[in-house]
Length: 148
Image 1 (cartoon, rainbow, N blue to C red):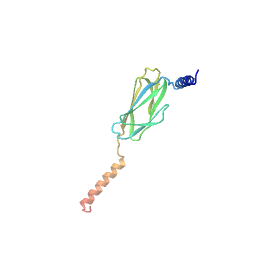
Image 2: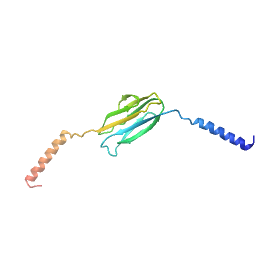
Image 3: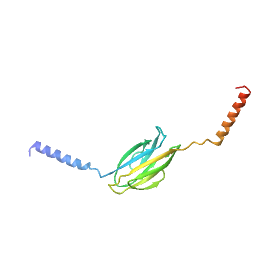
Image 4: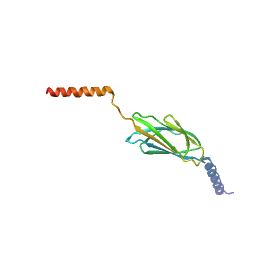
């Protein structure tokens, strides 16, 4: 065997061995959608098993490639917002506080998870209403006296 044939064979062996080392296990694509009407540019935090924490805004989505197993998807609570619904299709699941556990049992599963938030209505405190009424009355009294 000459030198160039030896190098070509060695290169081919390295490619085959290296390629075998990069084989990925089969995965399932999981879609996560965030809905929060009126959120504007606000971002909501999420944690998913096996992934770094991330944020999503209203009508934004994330895509994950996951092997078979159980995965938690949890939304970080946001002040002024209520997690009103979690919709899951294409896979078995269990609800957990602020999230869901997906049970991916088959490569034919096509999980889609939607987190829905609603703004919590702001109700003024009774003290604020009392102070507003007193202030309006005081201003009216000053105007009647032509002091203001």
